[in-house]
Each structure stands twice: as C-alpha cells, then as structure tokens.
Image (tube, rainbow, N blue to C red):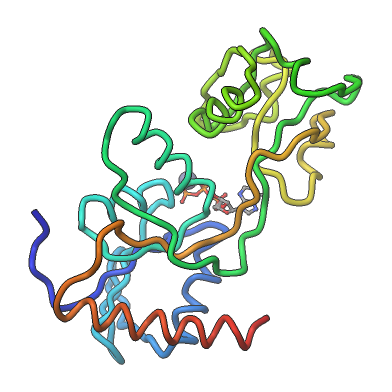
Length: 226
Ligand code: ATP
Ligand code: ZN
C-alpha cells in the first residue's frame, strides 16, 4: 500500500553521469529545492516536488514500491529490471514515460580485437560477461543461442583478459574503453538514453495534477532543446 502524499517525489542519481543533467532539466521546468544537509532529500520550494538522491539501480524499485513517483534513469537500467521482474514473475510496476535526450549510450556485445565477427551463431557455447544478464538472456533467446552468461557487478571490460569470459556485453558510448581493452563492438542489443520513469498505474489525487503539469513543462523544455 502506498502512503498518501500530496507532494510529488522524483528520484534522480545522487552522483554519476545522469546527476547534473537530470537536475538541470528539472530546474528548467521551474523546479527549485532547498538542499538538506545530507543531500539525500531535496525539499521542493517553487513547487511541491521533492527530489530523492539515490543510486541509479535503486530508482525502478523505488517507483515500484511507491516510495517515489517518478525517476530519471537510463533505459538500460529500467529495461534490465523490467525483464528481471518478468522472469521472476513479479508484475511490471514501472514504465518509460519520456526519453530525455541525454546519457546516450548503447548496450553492445564486444569481442576481442582479433575475432573475425561472422554473426550471433559464433556465440554458441561461449562465456559472456555482463552487468545486464536479463537483457542479454532475452537477446540470446531471440537469436536462438545457448551461451554462458557470467554476471559481474562491474569492470566487465577486463573479464576477457582475466579469463573470466570470452566476450562481454556492456554499455558503450565512445568506444574508447573497449579499444583500451582490446575489444571491439559487434552487435547492439539496446539503444539507451536517460528516460523519465513512472509507475505502470495512473497517479491519483493531488499528485496526478502535479505529474501532469510536470510532463507538460518537460515536453516544452525538451522541444526547445532539440
Ligand atoms: P550509481 O553510483 O548511481 O550506481 P553507476 O556507476 O551505475 O552509478 P554511471 O556510470 O553514472 O552509473 O551511469 C549512469 C547511466 O549513464 C548508465 O546507466 C547509462 O544509462 C548512462 N551512460 C551513458 N554513457 C555511458 C557509458 N559510456 N558507460 C556507462 N553508462 C553510460
Ligand atoms: Zn548504478
């Protein structure tokens, strides 16, 4: 059960790639905050819209649990957790409301430089290191490939050199990190960017009106940017 609140609460990344652009975008919608000392919670001043500063991985769960109403998170994180919930039979509790035009990257398969890439069948029986096991498994199933998914929590790009995996499935933007690890991207599983995420169900009461106003302002801000 969700507590009754009249204020809207938005989760954004506390620090990292999406933290500053998320704040800047929300500020451009007319929001402002009084910073709390611990900087985990920012009380909305201009409007009754507060911020919760968290790790990006926590954002879908916070929305699912009704702790936050909205969140700014990479599509990659949202989709991964959505697929993971589906796999475990947990109902889908969040959805993408708007693409936000920053944080662009793609989830890609990358193989050692010396591989000659001939296509997905080359992956049969191979070990693939990733921090996105659900997205990878879904893609492999779609291609009809049986491979060994090695789930890591970070530093995926060094897994092949460490002998932990034959290839990787990781986020790529410039490709510099891959190249530095003698890897090359060969297939894209997901085109990603930061998105506004919200609950799968509709808002009620005061928060419905607030969310609607925020989305209208957001659409205006996004239009003038592009
Ligand atoms: P947190 O401490 O919040 O867990 P993190 O280390 O998981 O942070 P960041 O590295 O800040 O997260 O990345 C946040 C998001 O930025 C990614 O989920 C992705 O959507 C996006 N992004 C854009 N380019 C890249 C890139 N080259 N590598 C990783 N993420 C990228
Ligand atoms: Zn994270």
